[in-house]
Length: 207
Figure 1 (cartoon, rainbow, N blue to C red):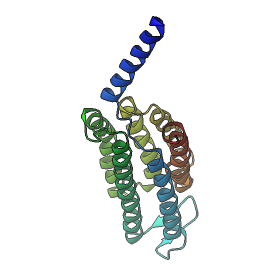
Figure 2: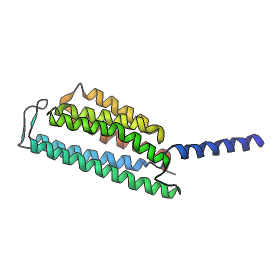
Figure 3: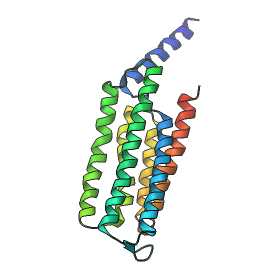
Figure 4: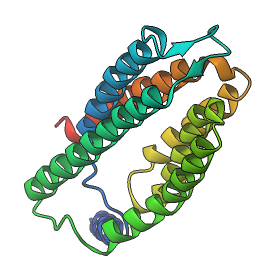
């Protein structure tokens, strides 16, 4: 009986340590919705690229006008903002259900470690856009986002690490198929978010 009590005490201590060092209020549902937003954005980007008179050329050698590039940036920005806002709102809701503070030392470390690779990639991609090296944008967004997830995973749910590794792998594979960047982008930000978000939802929230 005493051994059983000791095991319960150890389990309680472990749970308290996890709560203090990891942000566990990350919502799997926000990942699912982010994936849906990304698929909608990819469809809008596809229409902009392949049904817009300001683009021309074959599938692998497109020439995209400045106006089309600006529309693509606007679509990407809307998808990013919608995903961030959704993630914040759903994480707040999940934290309140668990009587936890959503903005604590763990969530601060999570945001900082996530933003360092992401901001680095963002500035690098802006440089590529200025130099009109558009073929590398899709692979690099996947790679830098994946690095951000891996870097931040030690401060949140461990499943985020595997999402990041999958994104990096897709990004590297996409460098071999530069003409199919939009497809890989949809597969990564759309499909992977929905799959991993669903797994996280049913693993941690469906109770």
